[in-house]
Image (cartoon, rainbow, N blue to C red; front, top):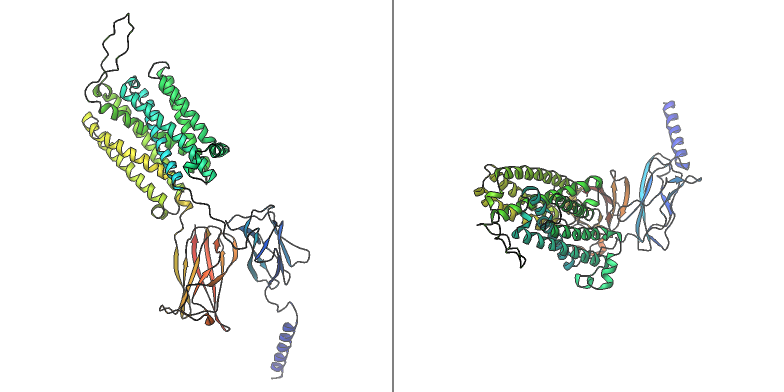
Length: 566
């Protein structure tokens, strides 16, 4: 019995020593100060963020980072400890723009436990304040942008597509009146499209409507800058295209050279379309640019070929070339008859066009699949965003055109072509209109972020969590506390943190205040409804929201909610 008593006495002495010795029984490392201070506003951009703890710490790989409200990392170099061993210094980028920034850390305290946390500070702005929203684009600017895109596509089809296909398949048809009367107005549409796009860029840069953009000062400033270079190059190419188009029917340029020059101008315009659109931003730009160029070229040649067949099939009876004006000394000869559909659409030409169209369709489908894969993520964005819905409409129209083409291909003949080709062309015009809307909409990958609602358990109750948007950036988090049967239960306070292992952010503090609309309980006993203050989820990935609900001095409950941010 004596040895047992001795052991008990020894254990008591050891416990007393442990409790009395500093550092052996100390708590986890706690942040005691920071520069800039938490929840402070500084007038100048700091060169570093210093975090001081109440005990020595150690760090691992990537122990801390500083991020903006938009999710961009602004820390540079490697965070390091000072000689004292209790201060972590994080170098940051010089000349930070005005806004709110968060410094997060993941360190190891002296008792080998991992400690995480965050502070927030503002540079020439209130800490925690979301970034100012971009002013909305005037409705007149959006309408003109879409109209200009539609006119450009129509102009390319009616001038470049029609001319190249005609020169390749039906030599001499550009001299026909109905072809010339289609090519010339189509070129005018391309000119109007370029002028409209110039006005759109000037209006967007000055943040005004189309009417104000017509002023000389706004227009000149809108043309000044690298972002309008593609539009100006496109305008110059359209001018050169017009010169070649008007010279070709008069036999001033050989047809082979004309086809090459017209094709080169069309290719150049397609390059400017890619450089001025969605292909020039985002991931895999090096691949998206040539794929988009091929998509525009294939669309131009396919619809241009359909338009040439429409002009031939709808010619009706044989018409005549416009009479030539003879000199007074020479009697004028009777005009030669204009070729009819059977003479132009011979079996050899139809089979050649069939192979041509099949090649263009394959290019269109493959390039369109790549563009959809690049711009739509996740798959739900296909029906949950405007961009995705418009793309579905465009795909349905293209499928209808392919069905009509397959119907006519089964037995190539004038009777079937007269029924199918005009409908195909009508669907093609609809595709151009839908495409003009599609290219002016932000891609689905940049807009998808549906709201989220989920119930988190709280022992004998629940926390109903609502997130206004799961898109990265500013959001609003509402929390409603109830007993699990819909009856509100009050809480004294609500604290929360956001963390994301995939994004490398261990902890972001989230502030909550009682919702102003909460009248379910008296103000003295707390609130059952809470709303976040200046909440922002800066990085895409899987996030965890940890809620600490304080019901009383001795009753606090913790629950977590997981969600994905896009």
